[in-house]
Amino acid sequence: FTAGDLGPEGLAFIAAADSPTGRPMIAVGFEISGTARLFEVVESCEGDITGDGLVDSADIGLLLGGWGACADPVCATDLTGDGVTDKADLAVVLAAWGSCADEG
Image 1 (cartoon, rainbow, N blue to C red):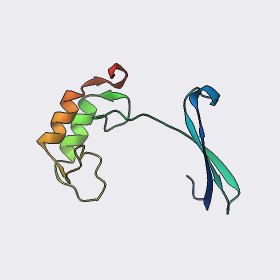
Image 2 (tube, one colour; image 1 turned 135 degrees about the vertical axis):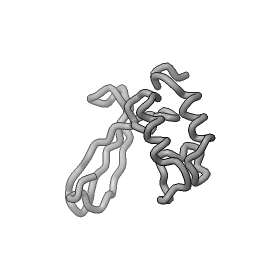
Image 3 (tube, rainbow, N blue to C red; image 1 turned 180 degrees about the vertical axis):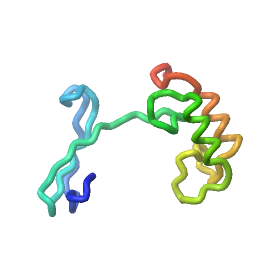
Image 4 (cartoon, one colour; image 1 turned 90 degrees about the vertical axis):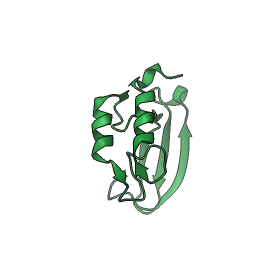
């Protein structure tokens, strides 16, 4: 969203086969501002804190930087959702190490 997008009203899912990018998207129409936006649906990769498609040393660095109790209700480094970045979160990163494309 941008600062000018006001009053989201309509949502539509666009399947990958129908998308101009070949990836699924969400179309959002904004009633008040009269604008529309397309958002690409991105699959998450457990342990990929940076969102770059790899679970690697960059993710370890962020995880260690966020070590301890989470200051905010949403904490990107708390992969287990228990409110603390700790050894359990480190285990998630280590278990998922490598390219997210290698999953599944």
